[in-house]
Image (cartoon, rainbow, N blue to C red; front, side, top):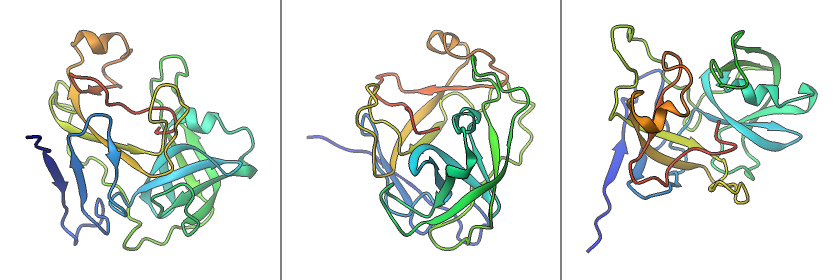
Length: 216
């Protein structure tokens, strides 16, 4: 008999961040799965010429956090926008905002992807409600830890990116996958991690789970 293990992520509804309309429910299915509707309220779709290119996280009603390489892919911001409050890319009832301003980390390295981070200022504030919320940012001082996230910690990646390395089957519906933080000393990580002080490694021993193009 097959047994599927399920993890339910709940939060205190009185918290100012990290809560969505519905709880996130994840199973240990190889390759990921479709997310429960309205369970990741801070995810947004970054689009160029109405095409999804990357994801982002709402940090407050005016600002979104995304990857620097996503911003660098946009050649004319007149045709760029951010869409919040959706589960599917084809959904038409999301909150759409233009990009008023953006900041790419000054030390972003497009070769090694060090400091691959950027902040977007929206044209007008998002209306936070049941299905749109802001992500919680770390507040503790992790400088005393040798590694963060701690190896073995469960991490969740979400996005509308490609579902395989062929990039031929991007998802219209928000996907989620559970992976584990891996030690920076692991041989599988030393190949891809160029600066352990700024980057971390995650995956699963049996493979088959990862983020892909469009998930950033």
